Image (tube, rainbow, N blue to C red; front, side, top):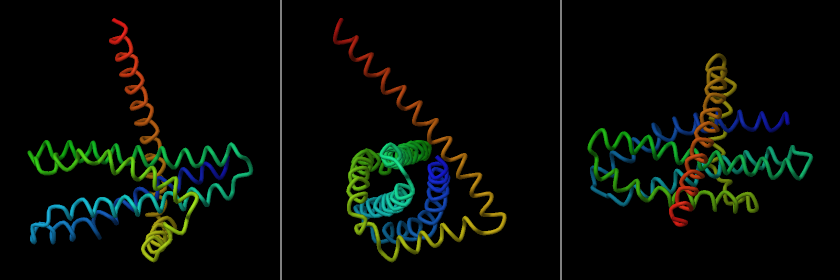
Length: 197
């Protein structure tokens, strides 16, 4: 149980630090270049690469926690938590991006967001594959990102603040997941009643 809590906390920190680094170090400069050379399909490649990195970091962290687990239930629970957090991260990011795009009347972005469900499903499949074949996720870039996460986590004061933010992030992810699950169940029941009548 102790390692499961540490795992959840680390996943929260991972998502916060990765989100910040990915946005400011990769996405912003690459998007500017893609806009200048008018390479629209480059955005899809950028999203796919970002998904790969997030899945890699999540899967490697899950494997670490699974290595500390002493039971089959713990292994299943940890692997399911990792997949759940991935799905919720993609869902919340897509929702936030869609809301922003609608506010800015950015129809090109709205159009591109309809493919996000494929990124989410593809990422979940990749996550499962990486749990069995970790070598797919291990490369200099993921190692560098882990180093940044560890540095941020252990940095005085900032690391403590990121830790608190990590807890808040995980609580919001779980809350969002419960709401999303409730909506899905209600939609299934509504569809079932509609078919009966």
